[in-house]
Length: 192
Image (cartoon, rainbow, N blue to C red):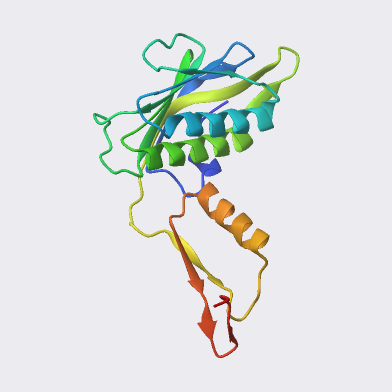
């Protein structure tokens, strides 16, 4: 099992593999930094993504300082090597996983990248009941401040649920701008 950059969209700035693996099992715990309000919600999001892929309901614990082996740690750290608030690092070691960012937005992006790893780079060992992840380090931040797309709701009507699903899809790929084309000769799509 090898950590490769070909499973990530968009491609991270740096992916380095160390050639081993981390095992997520029923004893793995998710630790999160309780000093930042949004990290508990982000830990819940990570919990859901792991449960969707593996079926394991991991324990979530507030407080990253007391984490031990067999843990996934979410941290907001002002001393991280990336100063960009959308940037993050993911360090996957044999005994723990660290998701670190300087702001909640960066931690959100780290979880989206981790989810891509869960879906495309992990292996489920059903005999032992563990999910194997390749070890290594991922460093990423956006090169451009705007990464987004346009949705033309003037010429093509979309239901609210479709637009919300589209926004979720954009977030999955760490896009940060949605341009809604609301008005053209064909119509105006906001009720006033």
